[in-house]
Length: 206
Image (cartoon, rainbow, N blue to C red):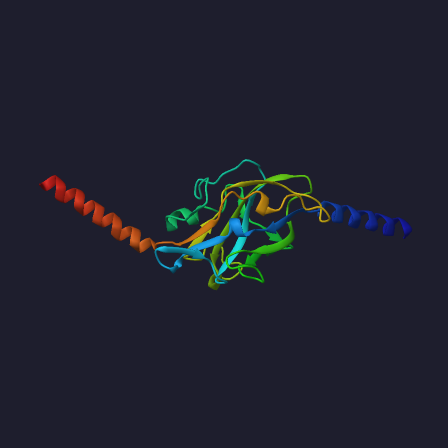
């Protein structure tokens, strides 16, 4: 019986050790804020609390996602958003829940802070690739990919720390703001394609 208890205890300890997480400070600053181009169309403004901010991460450092790009921008096509997840990229979770922050949570307009967070599937000392992503709050915290309003940061290499020493804050790593743009519906692209085809046919006939 004692051997069984000891074996069970060692097994539990091993499981707990294997569940260790890498931590980072999910924070931002006024200089690396969230701007949107949909509250006032045609004019970028500091985003109010209608935007959720999250994290995309890849276990391999130095990675970029061609569906996003290498600089702070807004998403250009609905099709490219569908290709963001996969290829090693996934929405960062803590204990199975998306790591998110709403803008203006007791902070200046357009800034966010999610605090110190542990990312499921990582360990302290590991360097990962990260994108800060933002989408419309009406899609919900787990609504990644379901929103028609989206944006992302520059790609960031972040060394994760232990919970007591989370390492560099994102505000020290981001090189510019996140611009959140409206994403055209697939039907819009279809119409644009038909229009372009019609113009080519018309030009050939001339």
